[in-house]
Image 1: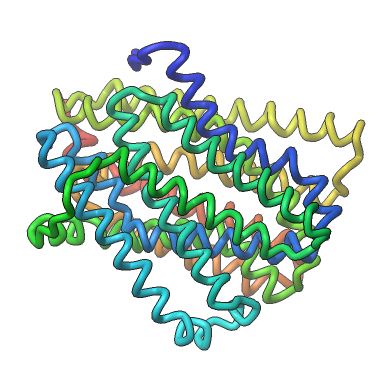
Image 2 (image 1 turned 120 degrees about the vertical axis):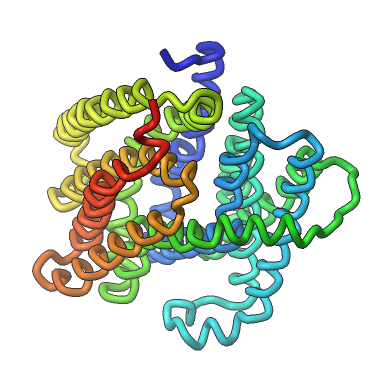
Amino acid sequence: MIPINSIAGFLWSLNASVMPKLIPYLFLPFMLSRIGEAGMGYLGASYSIITIMSLIVGFQSFNYLNKFWATFKVEERIVAIRNILIGCIFICLVFSVLFLPIKSLFTILNHFTFIHWFAILITSLWLSIYSILSVVYQFRGEHKKIAMFSSSYVIFHYFFGCSVLVFLESSNWEIMIYVQSLVAAFLSIIAIKKLIGPIKYKIKKNVINEIISFSWPLVIHSVGLAMITSFDKIFLLAKFGAAQTGYYFVASMIGMSLNLIHEAALRLWNPYFYRTIKENKKTERIKKYIHYYSLSSIFFFLIFVSLVWIGNSYINFFDKKQVLIIIIVALAYSVESVRKLYAGFFIVDKRTLFLAFHTITGTIVMLFFNFFFFESLGVLTPAVAMLAGFTSIVFIKLCTVRSLISYNAR
């Protein structure tokens, strides 16, 4: 049986997943009335870019920590974290300098000023730091602190952002991005102090080289995944305009809410998985849990669909297309949760190139559906493309995972 330190630990872990999603839902009616569907469309596209950039800035270093945390001594952990933070800040500075060349390459950035771009980078840096902080607290069993940081971030972002909109009597959606970056900068400073304290920064080339060699395939892998989950808003903004993007974004947020359960479970699963693999290489029990979780994902999805259908029949807030978007997005994230469980085996065996290959394939499938079916499917296209991308990844992963030593160990 998976050891859970306490019911309180699980509830704090669930809180860390729920709060970042719940608060935006609570503020959704106000946001729609204040900045409109077009503003929500631009905001959704900005959030998608933040998601992609945070993965590039963070360089998937949290997976490096997940893999080696149990084998590192305390001093080695501090050195690794210190060098990771230096790398994240350096990547942010590079992308700040390259703003104009990047803007000339991607027309989607025509709406962005340098301040807007810099705010995106600051927020991306915070998300990278938070992912590292989460790994540290997960292994310590301090789920309450993870919840406190994630809750503080989203509450401050929406409370102060919406307050500024009211105070200035403004409908400018960019205000939310600027306030978000200020909150991110404040929490980043606190998190860095929590992670390494007053210790001086020392760059160690061997540590950086080790992190890069381990993580670069995972960067390709994670950016591909981010493309599958975040390309939808960018695609819609380019093809259908801001209003349709906002129409889709509002519905997809509800579909993503099913992912709260999966995220909470994975916060507890990862430390257990890596410790078990490290200690005794017994995987039969792990594989059994994965099968049980896959079945439970189907169960949770069916309950979610029933609740959405019944709830909307009374409230009638969404039209039929939006209900379909909610259901398809929820199914896509259920499939994605299964992918995450199997990914650990590839990380343990250092077969991160396999993960990159799987994700590139899924991204190609997603892009194919987006560009060749948008005329027939319309606004439903990104949701269907996301589902197709994740399904293809899980299929390939199931076909290749049996070749791994860690999967076949007894």
